Image (cartoon, rainbow over all chains, first blue to last red; front, side, top):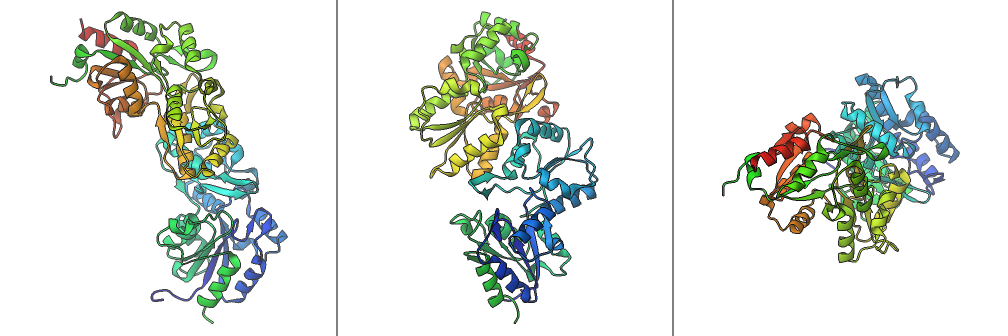
Amino acid sequence: MAGRRALKAVLIDLSGTLHVEDTAVPGAQDALNRLRQASVAVKFVTNTTKESKRNLLERLHRLNFDLQEKEIFTSLSAARSLLEQEQLRPLLLVEDGALEDFTGVETSEPNAVVVGLAPDHFNYQTLNTAFRMILDGAPLIAIHKARYYRCKDGLALGPGPFVTGLEYAADCQATVVGKPEKAFFTQALSDLGCSPNEAVMIGDDARDDVGGAQNAGMLGILVRTGKYRGGDERKINPPPHLTCDSFPEAVDHILKNLVSK
Amino acid sequence: MADRGWPGCAASLKGVILDMCGVLYDSGEGGGVAIPGSIEAVNKLKASDLQLRFCTNETQASREKFVAKLQKLGFDILVSEVFSPAPAAVAVLRERGLRPHLLVYDGLLPEFDSVDKTNPNCVVIGDAAEQFTYQNLNNAFRVLTGLEKPVLFSLGQGKYYKETDGLKLDVGPYMKALEYACDLKAEVVGKPSPTFFQSVLNDMGLQPHEALMIGDDLVNDVGGAQHCGMKGIQVRTGKYRPSDERHSTVTADSTVDNLAQAVDTILNQRL
């Protein structure tokens, strides 16, 4: 394909792609091992905001996936960088499990609002507090704007709807740090020494994983697991480079067609 | 006849429509507090030859209950003079054969007593305040995503309102949240829907240019009324903020301190 260099890196979404809650996608562990045998760098990128990197790692190890903490890049990491850059003190609407990734960040007398996936904080009282702060000038930072995610008993609202509601209420625009922002993908690739057109992203979210990655210059592979719903591949333009059943099939495609032998 | 701006236009007016919360009173603990001068302003309007109606997006209580609350504060006001979204929504549901899943404040439920709520095929949200829990919103979201043709009615679309202890989120942000989550557009029942304003004008038997709306919400009261051909006056009470006077799309025909000042100005034009 003209203009595209050989594949150097694969970015892999976690929730919905390698596993759904505490169940691994069948064949995913082996597929990951096969991918590692090819000469490509691998990074695990996730918008999951409920859990710290350590929690994610523990769960993936429990499910027999072979990976290290430094290979994980989350939207929480991206949020923390922004807070430090801008010297902001956040009101963290983030689940307890994720607070660990903000250790050391000053939170007294907050002057910014950070919204992640935090059902416990999406109550009327807390949202009113956040709203009043934003109206007074506090920046609104969204870890990501996912519309919903899949959990054990069905679909559940993500942070996106609540961020949208606050944007409307306070007439402002949130700074989004997670997928599908271009900056997220380029930041994830930055320490792998490769550019977007030498990388491919595998994920279950057409807009946030595949659309975002392709918009950053990468190839995108959409898998039909996790939150995928029939017809999702038609919701982005250009369409995914490939839509396949699950992670193992995506790896097969990469090994057969994208890596130099 | 040339269209005169404020206050000259008041001379040829035939009717006045008043918003309630933020114009007549501020809601809050203990039923709320009347805004100084508003009780007398209403009395003066009633004593004049102008027709008077009240138009509110109040959806925490049934009309009977909040009119009773206002009468207790000293206001001369009748249920038949009040237009609110819930009865309008009930009419729409009936017209279209829809059965709602309700995400509304408990106090509003009586307005929907006569409505079939089994096997819901649409969602209705109102100003549910503390009942906007994650769980309740999620349930509404699941109803919508389970429908082949999801329909969401929002009773108003206000961003926030003022209570005695500060500004609070109104139904609008939650409507936007569900719109975003489900990738759909809600149908707004209540201000600023033109159908809603028209129903008030019809009741008064007036043409839009013969009526004037007074409210604290620049977009939904004033903008909504102007969109229908009425004049719209904003008061500096309630949810008013100074930045309203520099709004990018809506310019009130006038901004006055409060209802008392608006009414005195109107009646002075008619002496």
